[in-house]
Length: 616
Image (cartoon, rainbow, N blue to C red; front, side, top):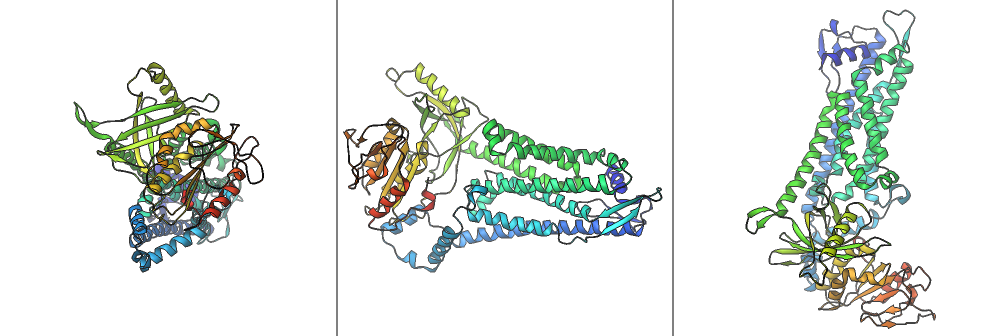
């Protein structure tokens, strides 16, 4: 240990290093001088300090071992009870293969899946946790309970009145608040790599558990809150001790706060509080997501460095946190490079960005909508997964997640991609401005091809959402605006791979009927081909007038109670009246209770509810 730090800690713990027969090492803490030559009270206090710290390090080790065991069992369980692929499920359903459903393994898997879906997937205390499942909150509760219990266990709680050397009649009050403050400080250090692990995109947790990386964001956020609480209590505890209980004052407090390790501790706490404040939703809305993301990275690195400066003996937790972060960034770069390492005509193999054709739908009131279409040579993705797109003409330092609006189709080794997004601000607005400039420079009447922009993509990420949807499941998809990109591939895939007996329906809420043109090719494709009929019901909330049929003719249709259905479009009109779910009052939003009731009442075969994963 550094001699300067030794001298500081010797004064802090009244240890006489010069008279020590030997130094007793303690992992994560200062070496102890043995035998203790101080007064009995100080020696007893030091026994508690070092004993509590050693137990704290043991509890931290047990925590990480338990996490490792749980992940190992989860990974083994996934292999022992694998989920069927989309192709296997569809093949078994279409061929009416009942052997798979009768096997013990399949029945067990379905039973576990049903129990998890029923009891652990619903939201839990939404005003506090937001849209978070009971399973996520349960994991957080178990972790918090472990930390709470072992913040107190193994500490001898007592008070020792000890004399101050060379100051007759002056006494220090030593209490177990010191060992307790050290304990929660150790726990805060130990949680740092776990918090970073929860935040990674190329997540080893996803690899082991099959849970998409974004599902760990909740735990990343709340583990961060726990670290803030622990660090604050650690600081308050030592403030009380050094400013109130140790004597003489204010000499002790002034000497304590001027020590280098304390200066680094104050800096670390400042960075941690900045991380917390800048991550609050109102602050993110005020400063913008990109500022939050970049400042989060910088402040997190500075916090880790300051923690090492504060207590170097616990860098065994800080260095892994840095390693995890840099490995995640390296994995992203490698994954992107591999996806774009292709043959370039005239140059051979090299990095080649995708060239996306741009279609712009101007909307000065609500923000322009941009559509991108391109193909790229890579393996197909699964329905429900998303990609991170980097628009190189705007900035190479940003990438944003987008869900393809099309089902994956591979032609001659190239997989088609289509995306739509509304340009509100930031990067999407820059892309819309680039599109407007290019379209203005090359009007459609004069150009042979649509203007293009370079796109670098990374992915796919996320979990397939139609993997276990068999052909007897009726599916209702609900979406608003550009959110249709999440459900449209579901309908395309289910129509292509289903028998004609199931019921498929899309309810899409847009501002204006002209917004249908965003996805006109995909909607037209739903009307043709084999498979079940898909009812598409479109509600234009800011358009007046009559219902428009698939052919574009204007119709008026009476409701069951004599009202008029307005603002709704059906690509394939159902036999029943739709007026019950479309209000004639502006704004015309669908009454979702009635929509779901009509859907359920109209099903005559199969399950009468949609999978949780297909809600949008």
